[in-house]
Amino acid sequence: MPFRLRLVRTLRRWHARIGFAALIFFVLIAVTGLALNHGAALGLDSRQVHSKWLARWYDIRQEQPPQAYRTASHLLVAANGRWLLDGSAVGEKMPHPLGLVEIGDLIVVGGESSLHVYRADGALVDRLDGYVLPRVPLKAIGAGEGELVVQTPAGPFSSADVLSWRPGAPKVVAWSRPTLLAASDREAYAQRLAPGISLQRVLLDLHSGRFLGRLGPLFFDLVAIFLTILALSGAWMFLAPRLRR
Amino acid sequence: MRARLLALVLGLCPAGQALAEVYQKPEAFVAEVFGTVPAPRVLWLSREVQAGAAAILGHPPPNLRQRYWSDGAKSVWILEEIGKEELITAGFVISQGHIDHVRVLAYRESRGQEVRDPSFLKQFAGAGLDKGDHLDRGIDGISGATLSVHAMERMARLALYFDRRSRD
Image (cartoon, rainbow over all chains, first blue to last red; front, side):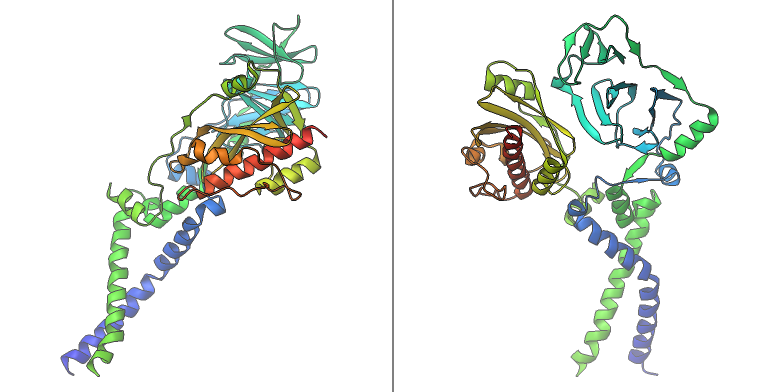
């Protein structure tokens, strides 16, 4: 058999083998690349993936919620920058809570430098931080005589509408204090409060190979070389007969 | 470095990290308008107002109540909206249903800071809403800052819409 014919057969055989082996990488790179190209429109950066195994894979420290904050009819549990208010997740990248207070129909969650105000159904009514707080950092929050009270380094401040503040506090203030959670509850809440990783980061890591760890990019470099060989061999098989004619 | 360069070539990551640039604190902006900081007022967003705000923004408003400041003649609205990936904070002064002036108070995107230039912002002065709650004039875009320009337009429309609803 002439050398040229043997070369073409060998090339065609290996082109098919490499092509089949590269199928999964073609699809992975194409799909993730397509999604990343439209990341802003798809809101990939704001979408979070919550999974305990993914957090372990990324070596993200997972904390169990040691305590909860309760009012007569509401419960707040927080861990990993996430809050569960009455069993529903109410946001990402949330601060560590200082307390939970009910003022009329409103639920107020206090952090060191912010107040989050919710309706009973969990809808966010308002977020107060910086200039709309009387002072920061907040040390504690509580309620007294229908007013919200915040404790600050400059003393307490009160508000009836969670909007405007007056210095001082009612005579009796019930400060919000955490209560310890049972071990079984801690585990159950930890499952629901797994840390979030942005979908954009996961897709970018899948696209670049970094998802597989330190050696992932090297592995994807190898895949890129194989894909290049595939393209060149395909081009050669397509063009060679035409050039000979 | 190699990976970053590759990502840049592939257009998969922004050219720089997002930096929060605070040009003026909101309370300073309010004080500049009124001479002092008046007590804040609130516009509660009824279902109808939420729907109107969502139609302007292209997404539901983040809060159910919106703070603003007013002395009866002028109102000040501090609003935030995402340009491409980060929030832009802007202050809008509304007088008699038209924009008096606008200022970008904080910009966090890595590109597109040109939206804070006075030459761009002065286009909003005097603008009002037409019947479809769009600005009654065109705003010239900025090359390379298209999404930030659109965010500024959405916030301008929202400030005018909120001002109108606060007077209903």
